[in-house]
Amino acid sequence: MNTLTFHLQDESQTAQVAQLVSTQLLAPIWVELIGELGVGKTTFTRYVLQALGHQGTVKSPTYTLVEPYQLYDCDFYHFDLYRLSDPEELEYLGIRDYVNHKAIGFVEWPSKGLGFLPKMDIGIYLSFLGEGRTMKLIAQTEKGQQIIRSLQSKD
Image 1 (cartoon, rainbow, N blue to C red):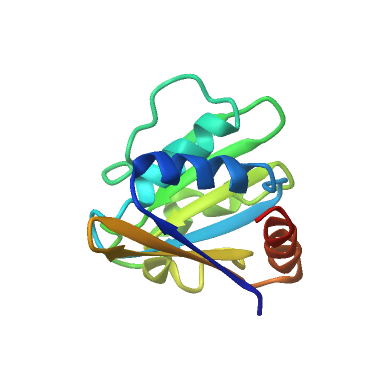
Image 2: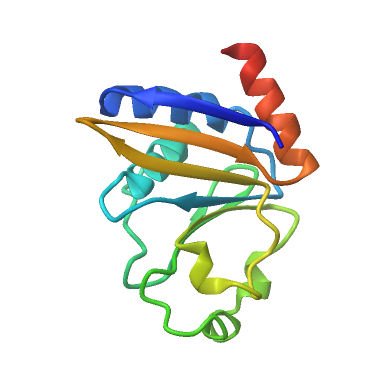
């Protein structure tokens, strides 16, 4: 498995990494975001969406479970499964409708949806590091490995 680690001192560096990562996101792709509450999973997703051309606001899907965004060439879905009490609830949410050839899915708290989510291509692990953050990208599929290799060549 390929990994790539970034040390983010402030939010501007988070935005820079989001811009870099966004250049590699071609649908279909699924990304899991792992980390404690408040570590920046939604902030990173917001910067990725902006880098992909989204002009409007980016709301946290904490209460809605999913926020869809229509981009020029793909459908972007931001899931936050923190409040999910049973993975089967994803069936009622219509998870199968979100998994398509035009989908980019970012999933916070993916462990809450085990057995009902598609295979994740990349895991993004965020953790606190003093005032900053550590972000580790881990490839989980061949597509994820290609992305990590491409990002490493730009690093």
